[in-house]
Length: 250
Image (tube, rainbow, N blue to C red; front, side):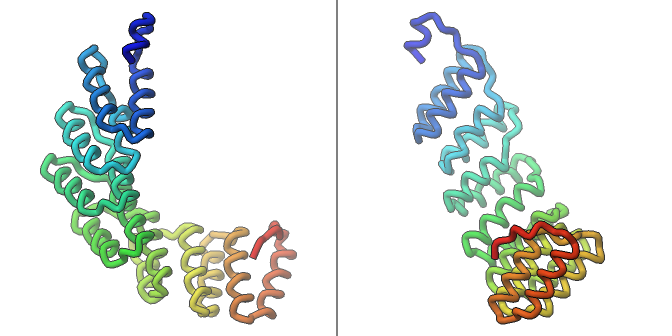
C-alpha cells in the first residue's frame, strides 16, 4: 500500500476491498483488519463486503470480532457468511457465541442462517445437534424453508433413520421439491426398501414433479444393487417411452 501511494496511485473502495480480500486469503487477517482501519482513517466507509472477505476463511475469532465491529458501526453483518466460515472450521462453540451475540444486539437471524448450521451439522455427523437447531428455529417462530427440511431429511437418510425422514417429509410446513424427493428415494434405496422408494417415485409424479435424469438414476441404482433387474428393465423401457435423456450413469 505504501509503495502504491509513493507512486501517486490513489486507492478507492474497490482497491481496499481487493487488498483486504487478498490478505484474508493469505491468512493475514490481522493485517487485513489493520487495512480496514486505514480505510476509515482515509475517509472510506467499509461495507459488509469489506468485512465479509475477512470472515470467509474460517477464522472464527476474527469473525466474532468483526461481527461486533460491524454492528457498532451500523453496517448490517453478512451473518450467513460469518456462520458458514465458522461451520467450515468446525467452530461450533463460536457459532453459539455468535448467535447469542445476535440475540443480545437484537439482530434477527434469517432462516438461511439456521439452514446453513443444520446442513453443516448433518454433514459433520452431528445429527442430534442438527435436530436441536431445527427445533430452535421453530421456537424462535422462524418458518423453516424447503432447504432446511431437505438438509435434515438428508441427515436422517445418512443415518438410515427413514421413519424420521418420512415423518419430516410429511410435515405440514413442507412443500417438497425434486431434490427433496430424490433424497428420500435415495435413502429408501440405500436400505433396500424399494417399495417405499417406488411409492415416492410415483407420488412425485402425481403432484406435478416429473422425474428427471437424477431421479431415474437413483431408482435404477437401487434396483440393480438389490437385485431387482426385472424392475430395472421395465424402468428403462419407461425411459424410452417418455423420451427421457438416457445418458444416465448408474
